Length: 124
Image 1: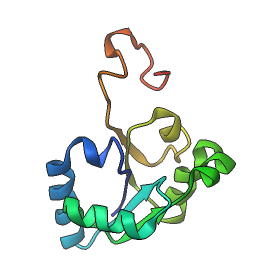
Image 2: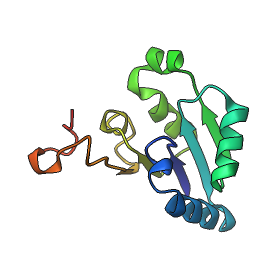
Image 3: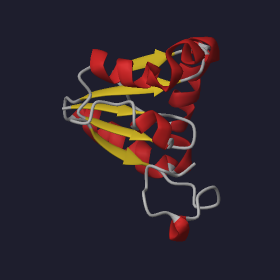
């Protein structure tokens, strides 16, 4: 299985869960791709190591590249790696991922008032 995971406000929302999950997935032979808008690849790899996050691939980008692609950069990376399951915190990015990809959204309930949302992808 191919799994894609965002870092900020996803992995960082529950480090214990994602540390456990990524270790189990990698140990079981699954492909785990960390997909992040962080420019410094070495610094990001060191950060993930400090957090205890296991992965097989690291995809980094710049804010400029993200602006060039719109919200579709992460979607294009998911396509590139044939991602089947994707963890992300922004609905505008999940909207750009192939609908066949099972997406899970880490929700910041301080940012989104879930009681007022009829459409979970109309959060903004």
